[in-house]
Every structure is written in structure tokens, then in C-alpha cells.
Image 1 (cartoon, rainbow, N blue to C red):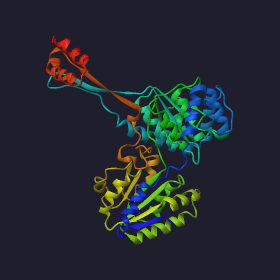
Image 2: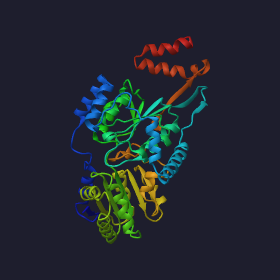
Image 3: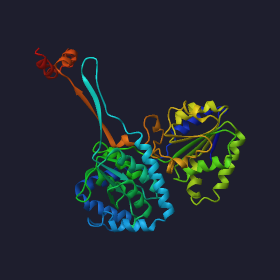
Image 4: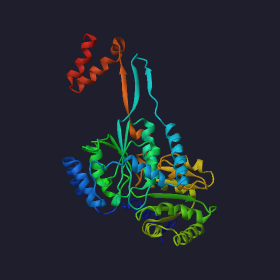
Length: 430
């Protein structure tokens, strides 16, 4: 059973603080192992990558077989049924349309001192997409990670994903083709991150790495950050549902389980002002768990990390939401848009009783790669901006340099940087 507590409890603040401090990323520190793998890949390149693939994924690779071939891609397209293919196409089209609307615009203006200023946006040259291949297969993640890169204008898009025993999941390959991926390699784990960051004879280095993975992948992304850019460090999935007693308990229960089924360390939280509704939701969760294919995973997540919080009034949920900064926030209440205006920290917000989080995972359009572990307090979901950088533009003529140059010379002198000062002074004849 999930943890249940109420704002009327004397120790509510202590219980809520404990919830905030709960660590769900696992206790095993894999940093030393990951550093060793990355160092080996940096030194030995392909040889190290292929050795680790044989060791961890149990099949042999070489330079000629590491990259997914045209024949393998053609076979994957044959293996995917038309209904699934059509669904992927719909998802891809909606994701592309959404991200196209959020392309940043260049700026160019001349200020009152006559200085011409602006910004220019450019995509990185190459991006790497990591696709996990563990407890579930996620073609949707391929679309979500790759399409914004393509929309941003990335010239070279590379995908890596583990292929245990040499098995290539056709859905992942077809999604990669729809998203415009240029190169696909059958490697996973920390060694794949190392190959993308450092480059090998077979795999040229990239500039940005995006995509979720296990603890080894997350640790590897941390280690190579600075050599390449990364999207974020994604932790276990989480959902917070704010619901009143007007909802169907069965719907709410399934929404909670939609994230619990991801991982044993996923977290599902319900905040409601109706104690009877809360009890009905918990009962519905128990019923649903009898039939879910991933019930073992979902049950453990719900028992270990699930939580039901009963508030006196739903308005009191706002500060709790902002402190939790959830990855996914469902507002199954009256006037959800007005309520959402008070929410400052959440990865993605789902408004109303007919907007389950699952619609955002696949076809809504906004990205489902979102900040976890309260990092929505300072970061956002994946977008075209993760694959772009901004250049500042500054242009002075003699007159505008005279207008602002003396102030710059004074500040340079105060900082003891005389070459800075003189580089301006020489132009002004001072």
C-alpha cells in the first residue's frame, strides 16, 4: 500500500519533508566503473567498445557490423505492422509541428548609442541520441529525442542503442528512420556514451548527447559533460495527480500506474481534498494490479514510493506541487488552467479530466523527455534549444565607440586590465 498522510496530521511537515528528501536513483555508486570504461574507450576506441558489447550485450561486433545496415533497416520496416507504423507517423508529425513553433528567432537592432546588437542562433553540427533497451522498448523516445534535433537543423544525427544478443527491435529502427536519424549503431551502456563523446575510428564524435538510460548511462553523461553538451540527467519516472472527488477513481488509479509501471523506483503521488475518493483510488489501484502485464514492477513502485496526500482544500496543494516540482503533473479538477497559472515548477502539465499523462508520452506534441527528481525547479523539458547555441553580435562605428568606450575603459582600468583599456583607447585616439 502507498503511504497515506493528511495535512491534518500533527507531523505532516516532517512527513512531507521526508518525501522531498527521498532518494530513488538507487544506492549503487557506479562512477568508478563508468570512469574506467570511458577511459578505456578513449584509449582503445573501437576495440574497447566491441569488447564491452560482447561482455554486456553478449554478441560480437566489428567495424563492418557495428552500424545498422540498409538491409537491416529494410527488414525492420517489413516487421512492423501497418497500424503501428501509421501511429508512429502521426506521433512524428505532431512532435515535429510542435517543436517547429518553438524555434528561436534571430535578433538585430541598433540601440540609442548607435551600437548595433543582436543574436544569431545556430544548431550544433552533430548530435547523439541514446535509446535504452532494458525493461521496455521506447520508439516514442526515439521520436522525442531525434525530431527536435532535426527541426533545430542538426547536420548529423547519430543513434546508439543496446541490442542484447544482437536483437534489433524493428520499432526502434523504424522510429529512427521517421525521425531522420543518419547513423544507427548497435552499442549501449557507458561505452556508447564514450564513443559518442570521444569518437572512435568507426563512430565520429558528436557535440551533444541526449536520451535516457540506466545508472551507467547517466553516470557516463555526467562524466563527459564539458567535452560534449548533454540534455539532462534523467532519474526514475514520476507523476503527481491533483484530483477532486468528481473524478472516476479507476481513471485516476490507472494514471498513477502509468508511471509506476516504468520502473520499481518510479513514483506516483495523488493529492486530493476528498478522503473517500482517495480510498477508492487506492482500491482501484489494487484491482488494476491484478491484470497489468507489468504488475510486479508497478506494485513495487506503488508500495515503496507511492503516496496519497489529503489536503483540506485543493488551493493548499499549490505550495506542495511547487516544492515537489514533479516531472508530470495532472490537474483533474475544475478550471485547471486557472490553477495551472499558480504552478511554477513542473515538467509538463496535463489539464482537465480528459488529458491523461500517457497522451503526452506519445502523440500530444510537447516533449516527454522531462526533468525529474525536482530538477523542474531549474530546468525544462527537451526542446530544439538543447541542440542549438546562441551567438551574440556587436558592431560599433567610431561614433558609437566614442559613446560607450570611455565607460568600458574606466571599468577595465579598475579591474587592472590595461590591455583591455588601451585596445579601446587606441581607437579613440586617447
